[in-house]
Length: 165
Image 1 (tube, rainbow, N blue to C red):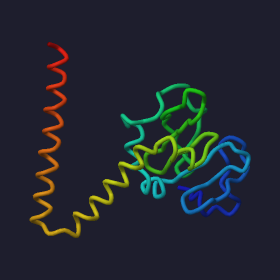
Image 2 (image 1 turned 90 degrees about the vertical axis):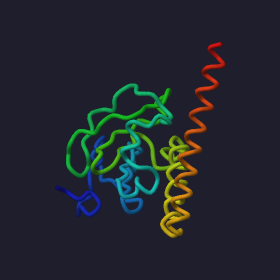
Image 3 (image 1 turned 45 degrees about the vertical axis):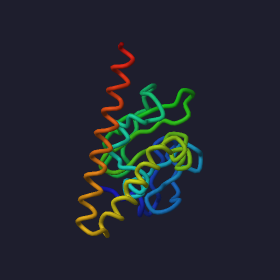
Image 4 (image 1 turned 135 degrees about the vertical axis):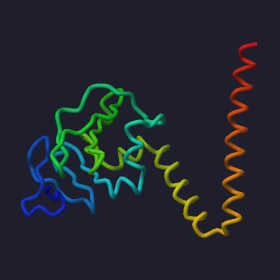
């Protein structure tokens, strides 16, 4: 397995074959604007990689497939994710290693997935608070969250019943 972050000659861009430049740990960028590789370590600070493929809050629908692109680490073909209505963002994903953002960068990704990124950050902050809290308080908070979810479900069902009558 190769390591694209430490290759002596630089990892070639999957589009133009010029060496990719390291923006920071786990992020490689094509100087010609072909795209950006974001590794899973960096990606997990924003959103869980498995959430991308099945995200109901994904900003785009499945459209034109990404040109055949291989993972920069293991060489397997990337799975196509979403493309914008006007080619705003096309992403290919290797679930084990990272994503290729075609003709885009991390800022474009952050803007497109802002809702999922914000939810992920809120969940991480919540989990950190729960790790430090008293176990009795944690149990109560989890029960309250479960009850809130049930109430929300019941409210949704009531609205649907009212709409049918």
